[in-house]
Amino acid sequence: MTQEIQRVGVVGCGLMGAGIAEVCARAGYMVVVREVNKDFLEAGMARINSSLDKAVARGKLPAASRDQARARIIGATDMGAFSGCDLIVEAAPENLALKRKIFAELDAVAPAYAILASNTSSLAVTEMAAATRRPAQVLGLHFMQPVPVMPLLEMVRTFLTGEEVFQRARAFGESLGKTIVVSKDTPGFIVNLLLIPYLLHAIEALEKGVATQEDFDTAIKLGLNHPMGPFTLLDFVGLDTALFIADAVFEETRDPRFAAPPLLRRMVSAGYLGKKSGRGFYEYGK
Ligand SMILES: NC(=O)c1ccc[n+]([C@@H]2O[C@H](COP(=O)([O-])OP(=O)(O)OC[C@H]3O[C@@H](n4cnc5c(N)ncnc54)[C@H](O)[C@@H]3O)[C@@H](O)[C@H]2O)c1
Image (cartoon, rainbow, N blue to C red; front, side, top):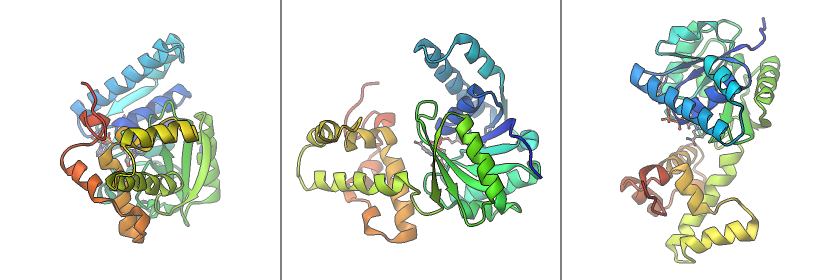
């Protein structure tokens, strides 16, 4: 029992959910995005509108396409709104109990043929699949932030994901203009498996006084041609997010490469979260 993907559901309209809803609408899909209440929904819709306006201002999107994309997005606060969706992407906060609850709810309201996907960065997709009665129709669709700009989509395939479901989801990802990479459902997937130990190592080296954060960033930018060095990147990703992913992978694997250095933990406790809090390894004006 399959169905062409026409209507996409997005759970959560925060940083990632708003971006996912936007790229789906821009690619021509009808989109239903759900938030927990009216205020969060309004804030999420405002985020989508401002991102679409920016794309127009930068000459990346014709104004008429922006208006069409906007018209394709429906906001909702109840789960029942997903009842006509062919594929639903969950982008709620990174908390396994919450995600399992959402997957059980989605399983109850979504059509039997619908594919359920999670945008999780660090949690086991198999755990979410196991919360449903359709584990063969569950997989990870890990978008990168900011979703409208970043070309990569990391697909996460569990032991239980069906081949036909996987291929349909891949075609969907490609239709969004993304380049697909495929990972097993293993801690860190591809990107964070390599990125997090690198970032933690940079913090350890800073703690040891090897060099200043500015020199680390300059070395990586100019010596390796990366768009940004590790400390600028940490501030951009959010120190709390980096710590959360490190802890989640360490908890599951006990791999010392994911053991967070004390400096990172102290900075997060002190509210130095990076760009979003105005201060991380660097200071940011308002
Ligand atoms: N921020 C990133 O750089 C990034 C990158 C890749 C993946 N992710 C993953 O994406 C997911 C979302 O992250 P985010 O940064 O967008 O978080 P966020 O906090 O900005 O947004 C999450 C939103 O989900 C809403 N929400 C909570 N429970 C809900 C429910 N039951 N139904 C509908 N909405 C609900 C919240 O109100 C909030 O607005 C997480 O799993 C995260 O790990 C984040």
